[in-house]
Length: 191
Image (cartoon, rainbow, N blue to C red; front, side):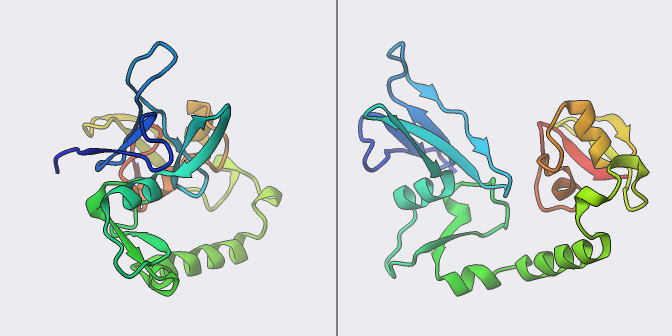
């Protein structure tokens, strides 16, 4: 897909969004064009802060892309990621939809049921040992983006500690389960 840039509505002349899900500032403090850092939230979705009139306002990246590039003739309120990866914000991966369609799309219901079963089995995670001391932990292997083996950890928590990442925020398990392509700049697999 060829990358196309369009002004962000309400921020014309200040920021643009691309059809590949990137955001750029047309004038940073030095007067240069600059790609913005996109923050991955705990729920896996991407957001970006835009500055105007001495205030930052935060936006979901997929919403900015859809508004700019995806037609919405039925005036649907929500946006669905076709591949179920909330970090893939390319225009061709997004579609406007109803709330009901979005809720029932793909494997979402299976994932919610699996999480509920897991929570019921483990109870509140703060009452259970974290890391390799937890009997439910699985070893995980770390690979670079090209697929070269780098390291092995007894569990996701050990990998997070090694990388200096806040617990439960890395999405390493999501990569191992095939829901995401990479996390923290690496590919991951269950051993």
